[in-house]
Length: 153
Image 1 (cartoon, rainbow, N blue to C red):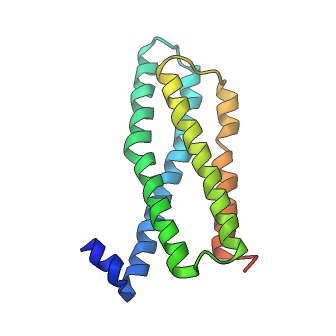
Image 2 (image 1 turned 45 degrees about the vertical axis):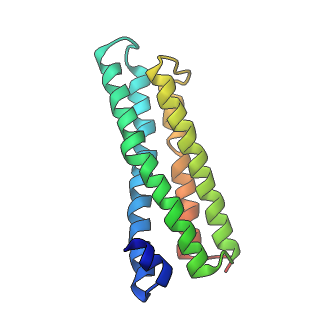
Image 3 (image 1 turned 120 degrees about the vertical axis):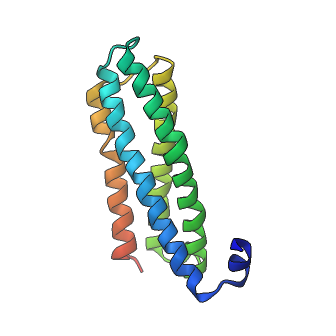
């Protein structure tokens, strides 16, 4: 049914894909905001203690169950919307895509950091994780400005 809808592109499809895209982006952003916050507390926890083991489970589930699927849906549906709705034209769209690439790079960094925490190899302090937590906020602001204002349309 989904393939038929994609193939025939009915009028209602674009709106529903926008809904799916927004829900996926919100889910992804929640993970990008929450995982560094978990790292702040994890960095302060004793490496071999029970809280550390709990953080490892929380971090891995957040990455695998929420963040990875949400990022993939955001990208796939977002690229389809960019192609279908705008034909990949407009400087605002390319700036938005560049910011989303930045979010993806940060996502990969966080995923690798979760693995390092699980292995007991974290090298950043809680303060550094607090500062890193601002990166997705700045990139999100760029994305929202490009989508709503379209300053370079």
